Amino acid sequence: MPFPFQALVFDLDGTLIDSALDMTRVLNRTLAEFGRPALTEAQVRTMVGDGSAMLVRQAFAATGAPLGDEAVQPVLRHYLDTYYDDAEPPVLYAGVAETLAALAGRGVRLGLCTNKPERITRKLLGILGLEGLFGAVAGGDTLAVKKPDGRHLTWVLERLDALMPAGAVSARAAMVGDNANDVKAARSAGVPVVAMSYGYPRMPVEELGADMILDRFADLPDGLLRLAAAD
Image (cartoon, rainbow, N blue to C red; front, side, top):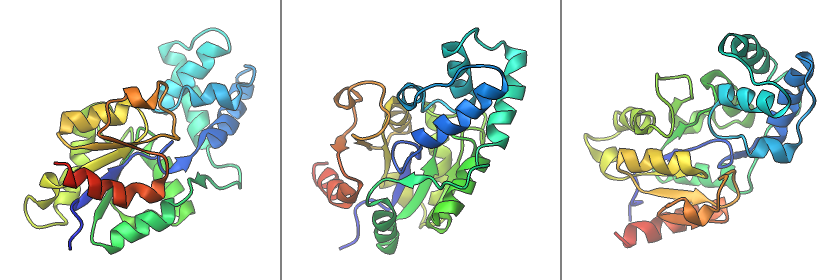
């Protein structure tokens, strides 16, 4: 029996990788460079999901005077340029690598739609050995829009669609994420959405409005089967 979804698009931070520790370390290095105090990982977790520029703005607002528009660019450049000066690899959530490989093995086309900058996203995928699994990748700076704008997700789906028979992907696709931006983008693009409960939702995950909530990434294939059967 063919898998009911021919394309799946994933968020990155809080869905595939637990990146809060990485971002805290890099962000604190940038804060120190510009004379600001450090943030805790718990503080940074509440700031994840809207892209690097917003993360930097929130971090500086939390540690003193907010950044003006002209001051943002040099700070953001330092953050991005030093993101992987460390040798410590990012942390995949349990079951992610095996589940993605199993889905790809069943012929499902996989895409990535994240508000993290594209060059950092692609570097992360390379470090994790996942780059070959994704047929389309959109970072927060790939287009003129980003999540929660549905066009960010639609762009990924269109590129996955080109890998399949005409019209197949758009009719049988789903989004997998962890926060309100993912749910809003999926709703705008007209596809169902699964929320992972362990990410960075910034609100009770039950209030996100997802079609399904899962606690373990390894449960995703069975969850998607149940979601398709409920249609």
